[in-house]
Image 1 (cartoon, rainbow, N blue to C red):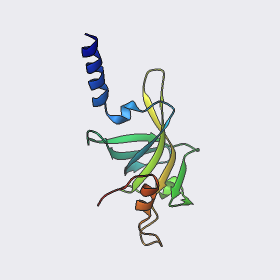
Image 2: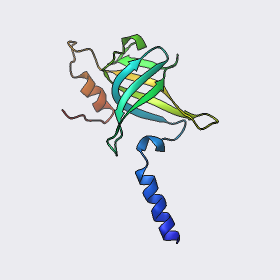
Image 3: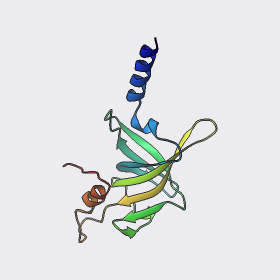
Image 4: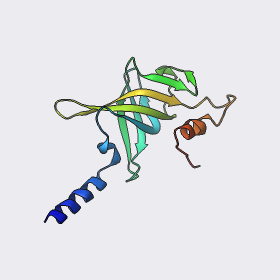
Length: 133
């Protein structure tokens, strides 16, 4: 009985999407494409690493959210719909169990035509992420 229970629990844990395993209060990396952005919220289309299921995450922006384009400071107004981005987010839960993602940092690639057109690959590479294509 104990072996069956442990097997069931292990199977259940392995089938839960990776984002739901995020520990509250810890930083996590989100990569994706901007669907919508305003002063207080950004929606990012991303893909679950394990299930490959696409989803749109709503991420809160605040006065502590740092925005970088390459290595230079930028603003939320510099973020464009359709742009690929990398975010560092923190997950918190309210008393009713609702999860809120808040951006600590948003990294954008250098603008195309700048001195470093491969900046997005370098930003991702610096994070240990190697995109193909």
